[in-house]
Length: 103
View 1 (tube, rainbow, N blue to C red):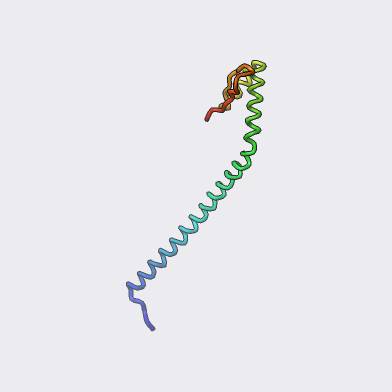
View 2: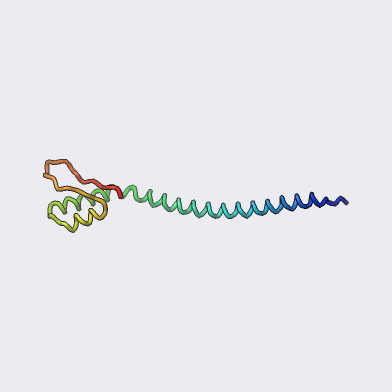
């Protein structure tokens, strides 16, 4: 029967211990990656579901701006300004000046 020398035993034990540490680190990283992927998937789904509504939101903002301008309604104008949407009253023949400012 062949016995390991003390240095061989220490080297093999160290390698086994390092392998065990790498397995634990890999497991932790795998779990964190899955959580991050789930968060990204949720955000991506929200964005994909929001894109078709953009046209509707623009039409709503335009209708509110026209209503505010027509009725001289300061509350609606303040509401739109609070959402970053500014507009100016223009004569019927002037080009549309409704625009959204970046937040």
